[in-house]
Amino acid sequence: MNTLVEAAAQVFSREGIGATTNRIAERAGLSIGTLYQYFPDKFALLDALAERHVREADRKLTEVFAELRTQTPPFDAAMRTVLDAVLRLHGDRPRLHALLHRMVPVDQDRLEALQGFEDRICDEVAFHLKRCGRGGDDVDWTARTLVHAIDAQLHRVMTRHGYHAEDALDALMVTVARLAPPPA
Image 1 (cartoon, rainbow, N blue to C red):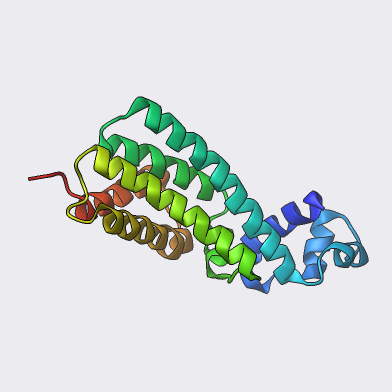
Image 2: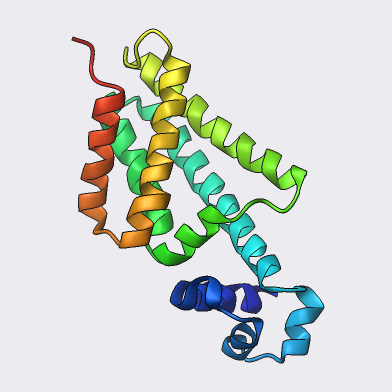
């Protein structure tokens, strides 16, 4: 099954939504019948890719946030570390990530899991905003706005049009500075 999912990632990265199960099976070196034993259509493969991506992102960001809670760097340094990790998670196949971001979770459980993941990220950003005296009167609101603005900038702009990692990091840090400026 991992072979099929990896082949799907490669084909969707190259062809976008126009990818077919026939080309995915061919890329995997398997028959179309074998593909259909595991996945009823290409959207099931996209769902598997999305689930894999969120699982990997959750694992990596959990590590990053644990490290930041131990080190307690200044807010900008903390955000730069988080954003660097996020960019690394998306740098290998930006076209695939742009496509996955447009896909709707297939069921209520997956939607709730995705929202839980987003909530954990917002909570961690809020923790660092509070710790560093940033975020204004409603730190939780600022954290949510910041996380979702960066999410949109990354998934809807950068992954669709390509980006250089260092330039992207700088651009995302501009968003951070505008939405959560240092205290005056």
